[in-house]
Image 1 (cartoon, rainbow, N blue to C red):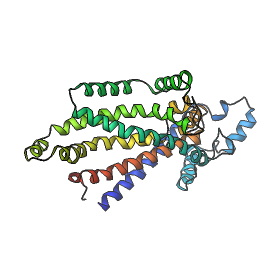
Image 2: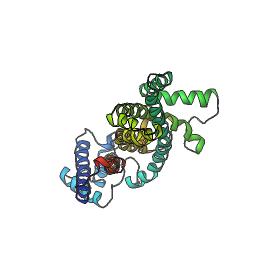
Image 3: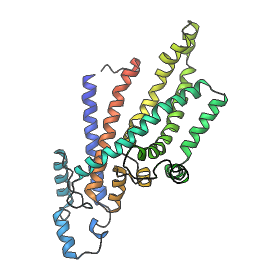
Image 4: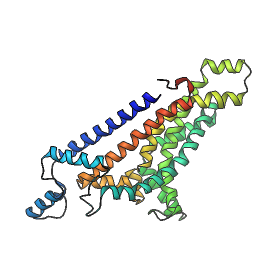
Length: 306
């Protein structure tokens, strides 16, 4: 087990290094520079700015300098936001995105799993068809349409909730629902399919023939074994949710990471885009690593012994 953990840590670090390297050279290969998208400035001023940010140096020297600073946790200064570091912007924006993401997960995970379990247990009944229909609609409707519809109904038509901004609990309800409904639909489908596969297994029939109670079969065998595919999907899902989504943050005017990312891409803010990419990639790698370790806790049959 110890060797496996060390091996996975090494693979995780190599993945982050590869992600940072590929992102660095892809960004530098884009046409133009950050200062051509702003208000017209003189050639002399552009040269001074390029020199200040080190963009006039050979590409390999820039890469070595960036990786050296990254190893010390320094992602550099943003080009778009003058005198602000990438670390500082992430430190301010991530709590906002994470707060919204945690609210959406707290709503979506129990609801989605409950819907999936009930749908599988009531397979072929009207309740099953209703929940499957809700899941299909939730997967089919884009977030911007759902968010706009919620804003119109609850904010404009009925005036019971604020339409946008991020100023308190009431402002978080609509974006939480808009972000969570898609996850509810996805988790409902995954949990239902996994439960149906488990229900048809021979060991379930054996347990029933031995007189094991229905409650024990459901909780100890069906739900526990059906959780593995759900847990597999939760790693990337949690990372994506906590890092924010541009569509939801843009519609509801939420100052999170997703909004900063797209604005930085439009402005060719190399350091900001690269910093957010490395931060997001590291977060995703860490969660996948945690999910792999969680497998052994959920199902002892696949517990790693090497």
